[in-house]
Length: 144
Image (spheres, rainbow, N blue to C red):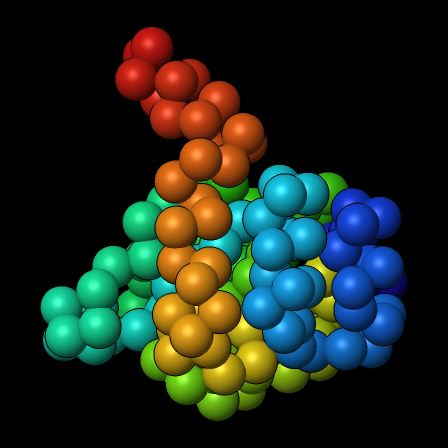
């Protein structure tokens, strides 16, 4: 039996169970519901386009292993009860990795349709800086 990451109701309202992408409104809802946002753009792209403050930045190649709860290299912030949103520059790479994760049974992962470019156009780049779940996580990390 495969591992399934369940989604918060707000995210599911924005995306059908089989959907692999979120539009900017869906991204907003996912962030508000506590999704983990993972920026898979290259360092050069982040330097050129700007960082996505509050997102976990990881190299694109190992992202599938990092987000699969059955992997030995899973990120600590990944759990079966947390949605994950992947962001690439234009959304294409993020969607490909989302498809790979879905094929592994990790179905609460979505890609931002249009990627960082769409978030910038939709004025959604700053959403993570004030997100309640990230403020709590930063506080917990700094308390250690």
